[in-house]
Amino acid sequence: MLKNILILTSLSFLSITLVACGGEDKPDEKKVTAKQLNSQKTNTNKRWYSTTQLMRGKKVFKENCAVCHGENAQGLAQDWKKPLADGTYPAPPLNGTAHAWHHSKDALLRTINMGGIPLGGTMPSFKDKLSDKDKEAALAFISSLWSDEIYKAWSSRNK
Image 1 (spheres, rainbow, N blue to C red):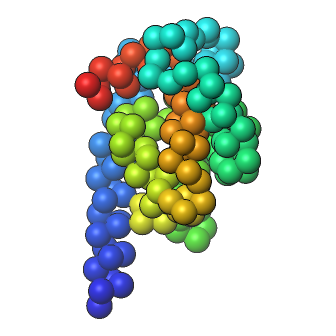
Image 2 (cartoon, rainbow, N blue to C red):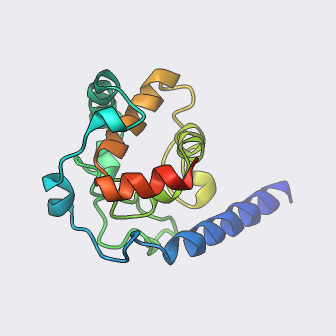
Image 3 (cartoon, rainbow, N blue to C red):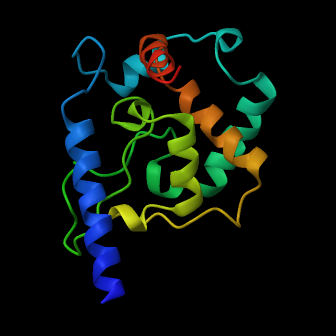
């Protein structure tokens, strides 16, 4: 009975999350390609993280996250919003082309800690696998991939 309640609660949360994130792609409603994101220069001095965190985060991401989210956080699935044959959702892009930027830093850290299984995904929990500094560094790397426009929108949403 408790297991069924947990499953229903998780599915409800996932549905709300997907609906809430589904309608807002970009601040100006334009689609941004990975190539455009990579070509846009960002200034780490205007962002929450240091260059040291960014370099550490790149390593942490490569060693722990890239296998599912892609080397450049571009995602590996054609449609990250569509469930796989087993009913789970694929790992979304984290580079600004999906919905990660819609969530606060705390919410993103919570997902790293809890994993994606409660939300219908397959991401394992990293609560006991990564230090707090490594989790923050991974977020530094992820947000470094966001264009200045996306970063500004994220930052203003989370003041």
